[in-house]
Length: 144
Image (cartoon, rainbow, N blue to C red; front, side, top):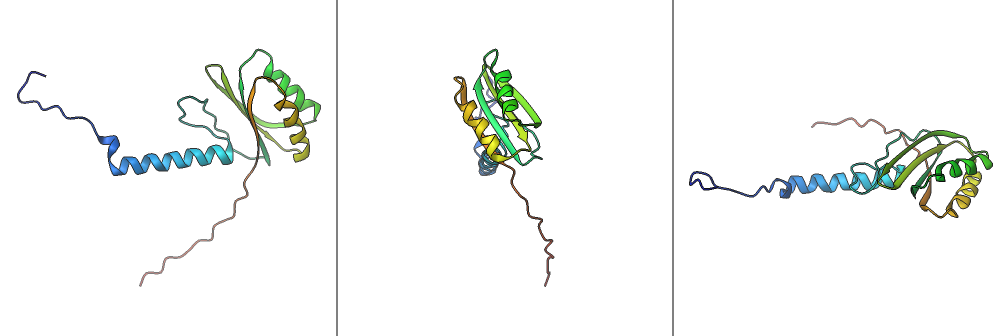
């Protein structure tokens, strides 16, 4: 810097034990959210997607964007009489990620998925089942 009173030090805040543990916790949560709910957040190279999971099933779709692929997918859903409860879509570049929540018979959804898998630009499609939550019992702390 040209000033004897200034000492330049590298910033190492991201390398502290607390920061590394926090990053590890966030990575575990992000991976868990993706595997269980299909959610994507804070991704560098994948479209973000968040949607509450109210219905019994969720289809996640990842595909290369083309002009007519989403209408073709919706047509397949109609062929199998699948009713979409909620849907969200997001893109990053030419990649598109879609969450579709359904309240139909699992076998009908699986048949539609098999047909969608045959489409050229589909990279990945998954069927997720909504997790069942157990109510936690309140535990009283006993102080001795």
